[in-house]
Structure formats: structure tokens, C-alpha cells
Length: 189
Ligand code: IMP
Ligand code: MG
View 1 (cartoon, helix red, strand yellow):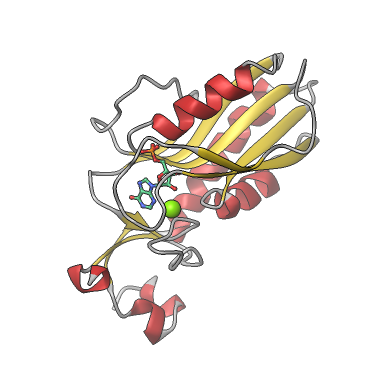
View 2 (cartoon, rainbow, N blue to C red):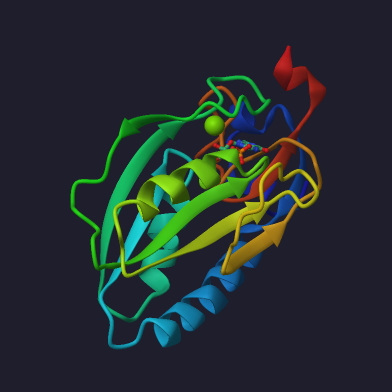
């Protein structure tokens, strides 16, 4: 068994097929992104906006790597229900608490698949006239994007497979895995 799988209990481990990105790899990536953010936003007030629920883990870990002062806020959107295909329909379940006009905003996403969720969010947030708005996405599936999205801070590329862990769910499960993994077919039945 890989070291990563030893971190979790047997019930959660049961349907995991393969660990794609280890917790150490994620940690190193966040350190590098945070260094860039520290430089790019030095002397500015950064508002980090997490897209719930998927971004809650990466957002918390990224924030702790940053050494500049930041504020955080969250939006909750629903794009999939519990299925694994993008519908393109985005519903805002929770909006930001604060006005972002004139502010420097970093939108934090868990994964960009079709890009439809991010595209919708960016259009929506840009209409509120922030000073700047950039995107950090932990994961991206190249070749799957149906719309062009400009991601200033990309994390990892993954193949066109459904992944879970580190915030990402299947039917609300697996968000608490400390790594990114694929599921065996048996998980879906
Ligand atoms: P998009 O609108 O197709 O880009 O999908 C974005 C959202 O779908 C993400 O924020 C995730 O919540 C969810 N999603 C897309 N691909 C995956 C995946 O492989 N695993 C888990 N959730 C996913
Ligand atoms: Mg989901």
C-alpha cells in the first residue's frame, strides 16, 4: 500500500483506485504559488475568494502559505448536483459577504473541467468592478474546456478522469482525503 493510503481509514480507502497527486506534491505546489502571490500582491490588499465547497481545503492551505495580509470570502455554487458530468448550469447558493468594487481579488477554484463554472463566476464578479481579478485553480483538465478561461495561477493538469480528494467530492464523499485520487468503477454503482 502507498504511504498516502496508510493515512486514511479502511472505509474511505475501499473504492480508491489510484493516488494521482500526493499531499507532499500539493504542499510543494502551494508553496510555489504562494511565493508568486506574495510578490505579485506585495503592498496591496488581497481578497482571496474560495468557491465552495470544493475549494475549502486548498483555500485554507494556500492561505497559510501566504505571508502578505489577506482577507477571505466565499461563494457557494452548484454546477453538478451529485453526477459527474457538467451541466453548464450554475446556481449561486451563497454570495460574497462584501462588496469587491476596487479590490484585488483572487478566485480560488478546485478544478476547471468544462470551464463553465469559472466563466460564469468571472463574468459575474467582473460586473462588480474589482480593481483586478485573477484565478488560481488547483487542478485543470486540459482539452476539456468549452470556454476559454484565463488562469493566471495554474496548479496541476490531470487527465480526463473523475478525481476526488483534497476538497473534491463524489456525491459529497472523499472531500477529506489529503491527496487527489481516482475511484474504482465500483464506487459509482
Ligand atoms: P466545470 O464547470 O465543468 O469547469 O466544473 C467545475 C466544477 O465541477 C468543479 O468546481 C467541481 O466542483 C466539479 N468537478 C469537475 N470535475 C470534477 C472531478 O473530476 N471531480 C470532482 N469534481 C469535479
Ligand atoms: Mg462537486
